[in-house]
Image 1 (cartoon, rainbow, N blue to C red):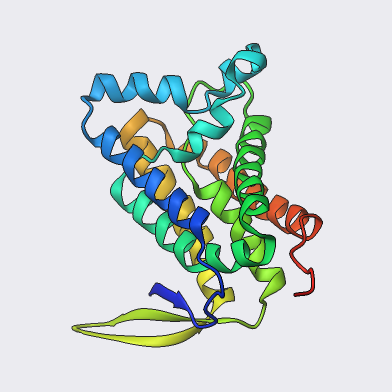
Image 2 (image 1 turned 90 degrees about the vertical axis):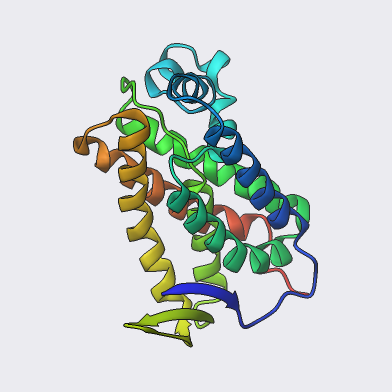
Length: 223
């Protein structure tokens, strides 16, 4: 199943959701233009390296933001951007443009810190928008628990659209990103499967902080 759109359309133009998607795509296209050696150096500069963050937080804290715009593979990028497109619009509408941006970046940074907390001395790069988007999904679940999403479904050789509860798609997102994120980073950074638990905590951290931060920023405000 692949989500297409939330049936409850927004009443505003979600400028920041569009902008975040565009920036992620542009950064990934730049990654694709780099050689393997250049890409490794790029990740070392802009991804979160837990060991470096531990030893020099003042000099490395900006990677908590820059790492959110890096991806290790096409599928990792596409799946993240589709879920941001489908679910980010309504959260931007509820929070307002600027609070939404603060919320998104904060969830991503706190997700990265959750991963850092589990493995403070790891030298493996941490990157991707999944933590921030997990925050968006956490906010969506508590604000629109009964919502349904029009979804593309593949039934053998046939393709159709069906209405699926958002709860199911969000559950699939979490599982899918744990798998695809670990797999793509293994290719990019030659990491071992034993680090998969760390990625798991980054996703859970983003999701939990999304549930906590969104109400504080006005998720349940009245129109």
